[in-house]
Image (cartoon, rainbow, N blue to C red; front, side, top):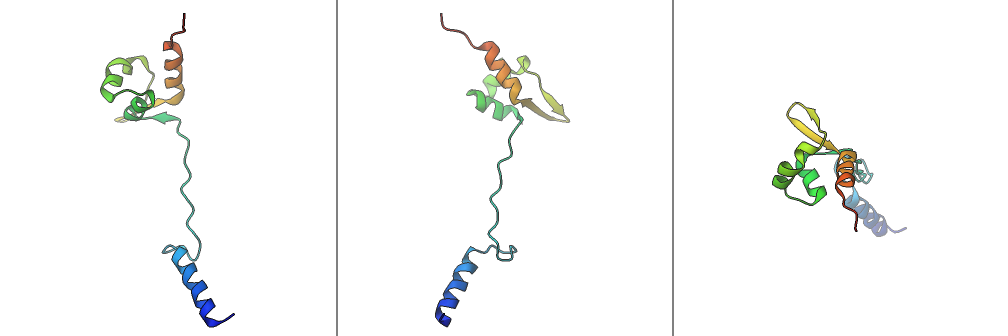
Amino acid sequence: MSPHVDRSLHARSQEREAPGTFGTVPARPRAVPRVALTPAEAAEAIGCSAEFFREHLDLELRWIRRGRKRFVPLVELERWAESNAESAL
């Protein structure tokens, strides 16, 4: 190969290289499956405002509490939705 081709290949490989990766392309962050949601995320998942969620659903759900953090398990949201769903007559 000519020196010109070698330099252009090297330049292209340098463009893909992120600092500190030593010539490798950094891996994309993997999405971690969620098992519990914050109150704001749970409200969004149900499709209501955080205020409506707090007023109407908060006391009907079982919560995970650690310090000041609160989480509602996804299975708890699914249980709530199933038990509150109305069947068509």
